[in-house]
Length: 181
Image 1 (cartoon, rainbow, N blue to C red):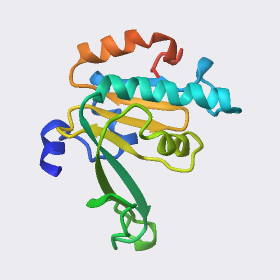
Image 2 (image 1 turned 30 degrees about the vertical axis):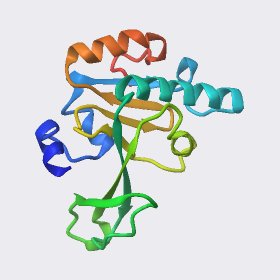
Image 3 (image 1 turned 90 degrees about the vertical axis):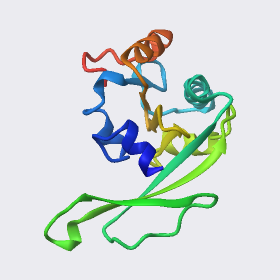
Image 4 (image 1 turned 90 degrees about the horizontal axis):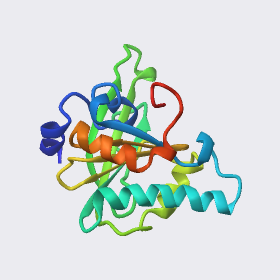
């Protein structure tokens, strides 16, 4: 996995919030609710959130397997247990502070699973409710990345043209902010 990551995304560690700057030319952000509303207030809005996530995920990964990469953030280098069904991938020193109490590590686990519409709904609900953050979903060749967050998703595609096509298909889900955030 590390070799594939380096092949396609050499300018950044696999940390979702850090990908946007070096890969802005293939990045698009979709908001998960109309008018860029951040959190669902009822079940009908939760349905919209899941439909938007699953629509884009299905466009990216239908018919294939995905890696679901889950981070555990810690101030210690010791690797914590991986989530059920996942295996340890790697640990990153994200903040190398001289004081060990302020060092930040990101321990990554990955699970490979066949993509099916709705198969990650529980995970996506936890992310939408801000119970979990930093998850990356990618094809097994790591060419495309889906990074959901509480409020939407950052999507990284293979080319600016592919990005533009996806952006145009879901223009109603874009931010009105000039930077795309």
